Image (cartoon, rainbow, N blue to C red; front, side):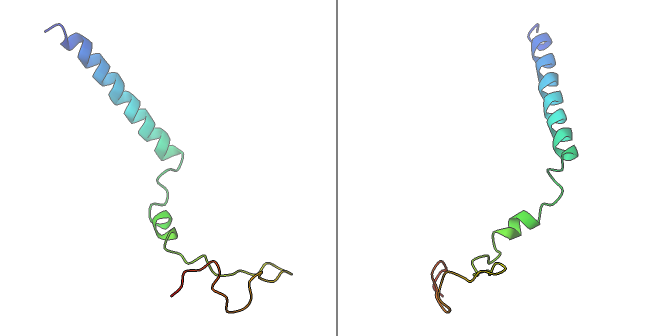
Length: 69
């Protein structure tokens, strides 16, 4: 029965640590946008993008760097 006096404070301390970590995550913006990061992987960013004043290093119609469709 004496073990309860050791276990309960430890459990409360761990619970408070998790609660503090949750509050920190909310305040630091960890859960601001849950949808966009999951959809970002689906975006097709393999298109050759021209930088101002620079041409693409690949010839037109080249599939270099892209998956064959």
